Image 1 (cartoon, rainbow, N blue to C red):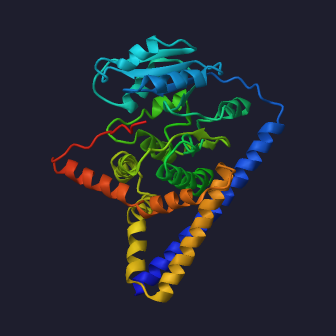
Image 2: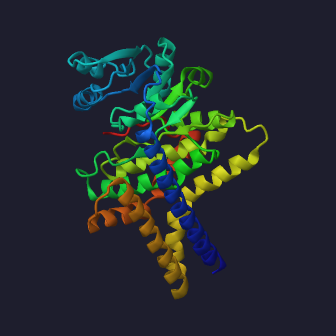
Length: 381
């Protein structure tokens, strides 16, 4: 019973922390956007190359990306790879026209990290702006960087997972709100507070000297997370851009489970790729957060099953507060009243939130035992 009380108190504290984080993020975004729009200094010249690593992409996505980026003056570089044996993506790009170039990574091994490292070595830009094929950032992301008189080492645009919101399923809508809640509640506050945290590999703008000093690690399934931890430990912190990169979420829970499993393993294995120099405290708090992700939904369900009437009422009251938190997130990013079905999707996603990490953990253990290799798994668009 004491365990159930502990779970209830912990759930309440974490929910309040998230709510405060969302409010903190909203205030920062509003303040920085107002400063940007009122500023007359928008012409600080920076040389930015846009990098989009691709692998086995459908022609529709390539065409949409070219069409989207054509409004910008920056040169767009698609990074193809010999790993895509017949390089159908190369053929599709040859059929398209626009302000873009291709860089072909010549090896049939390696993934996104190796593609990015190869492209960065091949170019001579001041900054490299990394996006995914389905990234549809607010163009103010780049304009904000141009307006900054400081040549910062790293800029990070936060992500909203709402790219396919109005066309998505109940699950994808709920997942989009749920994932965006994490960005507002955890990621932005962590970056602003300079906490020990990861970075996100789309909406990531890196100065050339930093990119050369910290090449992306190819031995991990999440090169962007490790890049963030490494630069953080070196005293390099991102400037949070107050505009969003808009991304899509997987269309169903199976693809979502595979994706979140990969994210979890990337976090779980971070100790392999960093040197903490004896600062174990940062690592311990990070792992507390990681295992909270794995166990959170399971522990709450168990507490509801075995709890008393009074503890269940308390837990359900806290969960209602959590729904209010998600509602606040939705008001911020969608600015439209959500239907009941979307809230059902949110509850469904929250309920199965631990399944993705559990899947990733099982795959990682099997990989370590030599039973089933676990490498990068591309999320189908």
